[in-house]
Image (cartoon, rainbow, N blue to C red; front, side):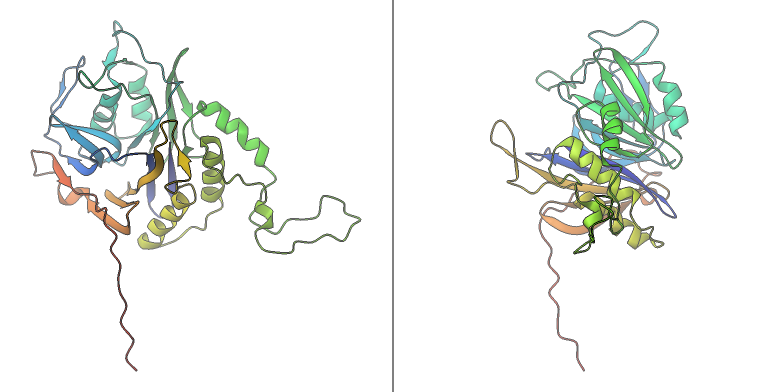
Length: 329
């Protein structure tokens, strides 16, 4: 259960809510240009673009959930259970990749969505685990830069690359459903509604926000998709960096999960473990966690170029409260 989105003000932003019933050892991780990506079938990418995002590091490999490279190309993997179907075996005359290798392959070698789309035409994503005992994550992917946004899905009938005109992705069903479903909400407006019910009757709004009556408020993927698209496309357009980041997190907050309100079939509590906002234009990674509302940040370009090893930053998960003192007269 996750939501990702793009946002354009003076700079281009990309980020997501990671909704999960547990923490997976996530950290903010920089993969510098010289740290090699070793693929199971596709050899080694020794030199590549620098990358920053949230990842779990296992056996020296950054397993990214979302990330951006130094050129501003962004990628996020979102849960897609029951629909994600990968190739059972490597394909001939294809670049065969395990699902977790897509980050290193695309962000390491592509500067734009256009380049990524071309590379994906040669790719076969295989049902290959990171190692024995690890599950193969059922994912679909949101790929974006300042000019375009795509969705990549591997289903029973093959690989599909969809243009994403709204710049939002959640989970099931497959992406075409979500775009069609938006047509059910064309009547919504941030403005006061007009009386179309019965023009002869003297009907008028009795409060603010009545133009959004019918906007779904539940935590399902379909409802979160609609709500995120509505909030994004009706958002004000801030001018400053601080205001843009703040607005981005407010949009994500509108589709976040409160612990206890969504329970898994195993009776575990699903929640928004962290939210991220990436200024892809400047290479700044912002985040906050369920237990810490304060926004933390890491700059890619402060760390990416001289280093040879992975650089890890903890994701602060303890609430930090600023106690105020009286203003002296």
